[in-house]
Image (cartoon, rainbow, N blue to C red; front, side, top):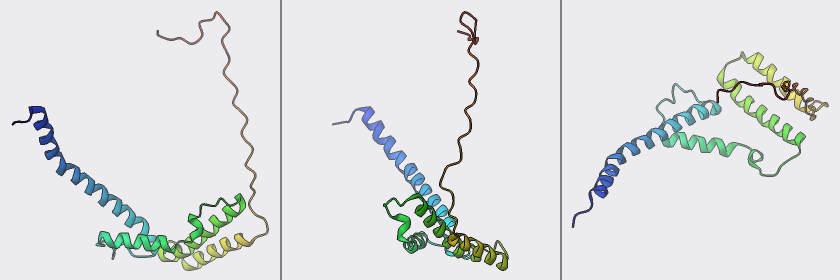
Length: 157
């Protein structure tokens, strides 16, 4: 018994598309791993020149290790108050900056140390940031309404 022609054509199409779809899937995975490597290596302080030939499993393991080292408060589902949330975020950012800044050598060590000390002092200062939002801008004036019976806005229809 022979299958109808349309069924044979569909099976042939699937057979031809499968390698192309697999190739695209692998390309997406490789691109995502490359992006992940670019994000995680600087945070771990690893040199990208020595790490250019990392295996995919190494990149994933480094990412898992990095995420496990993050404080659990970053992932908690409890909603702290606005001030606590701000301070927790500020401290987490400061801790990450203290790890990354010396490793990336963007600033001179003395400048880096001064910057970190300044930011640390801001966490213990007595004047917390203002939690009141800035005043909303005044609404823009509405365009004038044409009087009834005037042609108003020209429309081609």
